[in-house]
Image (cartoon, rainbow, N blue to C red):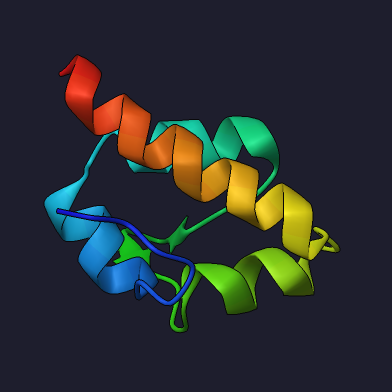
Length: 69
């Protein structure tokens, strides 16, 4: 799956399960009580105070994370 900043958290959690731990380590909680948080990766990261540049870096890292597994 090609991750973009418009990728929904629900799709990300379902298709790239290792993203949950990765994002939690960045300070972005994307699963609450076993259910994905609603919204896009961009929306959730912006809500947590990440800059557009930081979000772009996270997207790159998430895509790299998939190629390692």
